[in-house]
Image (cartoon, rainbow, N blue to C red; front, side, top):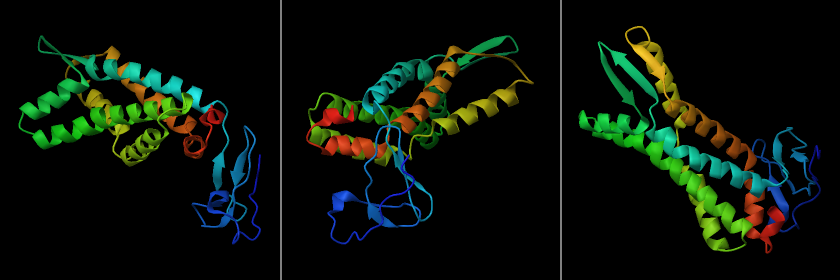
Length: 219
């Protein structure tokens, strides 16, 4: 573990060899790390970044898993509700449609964007970025898609939608017979895989792999 970064005079160093701490703004030489090491700011102790192994391959596996979970998570029943002899099945997509048909078009659009459209766009951008690195093609497009992904990060809110589902289940449990569907398990799995992907796909290694001559070094 590299517990600190060099803090020697940096005024003559090229920009690509410098890094600034996100917490205290200390400017220092970018340390060279081996796999498994992490760089820590010598002034405030903030972790600057860590060097993970097999980032591209592991991230590709997680992206493919998330894409496979996407359709069942959004189109298979989340809950089955039996009330007064009538049974209904609710999915994420049916929730959007019901909101739209009940006159709440603006809410339906927001739910669709945050729970379905943006998460899918994020996964597709990540997939294309990782392919451009793994196959060493379309580097310019890879940079573009990675920038788009960063702009979309704050708009995907699967965890908020999941909390809404759980609150609804708790409130309806006393007035109707509820059973959980496969869609809920897929939705939770999709959320967990995306969180794991965020941790695995370290930004500094992806930017380095996209900007270097030989992208295979990032594999």
